[in-house]
Length: 215
Length: 69
Image 1 (cartoon, one colour):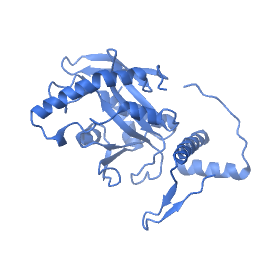
Image 2 (cartoon, chains in turn cyan, green; image 1 turned 90 degrees about the horizontal axis):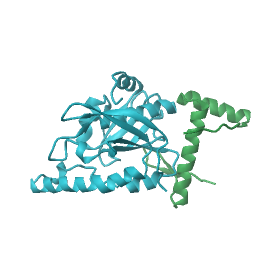
Image 3 (cartoon, chains in turn red, brown; image 1 turned 135 degrees about the vertical axis):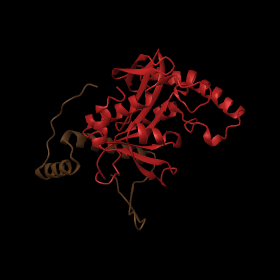
Image 4 (cartoon, chains in turn yellow, orange; image 1 turned 180 degrees about the vertical axis):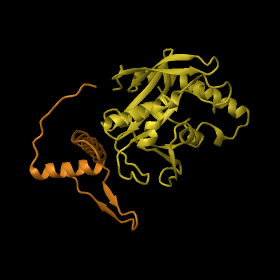
């Protein structure tokens, strides 16, 4: 049974990409039923509309958003009662703008940190209208990715993992994790669909937070 | 999330292992035990599904099944 209210809510701010104005938003500590309803009723139809456009524009499928098959209801059902997994959502203007699930049982691979615990980001996705890679109009709100990375770092610090985080990146997001987040690219992982694996060490995590990213 | 406190009685040997692991992983006792509970729950879930738990030697690819009681 998916919860109807989040455990906690933290105020955060997104940027309206067309007006450059700051928009009040909330970071929900746990994905709840409302977020899944938004995903089902708003994200999916919007994504389908954009996929149709990409198809009409003869864009090759390999350039379509790689997260298009993700089923957040299934993902939440899978981790619902697990102590090792947590979830987060960003809500602004009464609409879910991004969601993330994390795993607290994974270990670091980066030389010098091997075997240390970290927060592993299982899934992170912004609503289709907040993405630049899904055709049509430019992204509506900016900052979703940074807010969720910030949340993962905060959780890592709270768990005693010193801010370490790790994730496998879909190709379209490689540059965001490497350049915007300062994560180290540890190369393609043959055991995980050949996706590139990235990690953030404690120093880089501190630097990310000190720069005020994702606040 | 609200938290509850409990007292845990350990033998000297158990406490020594706990402290050794905490040193090695640079974690507090609470964090380490919380991690242990998370892992125990995850393993139990997989075993209930009928999965088996293995350790694999990376070089030889040899697998050793862990017996779970």
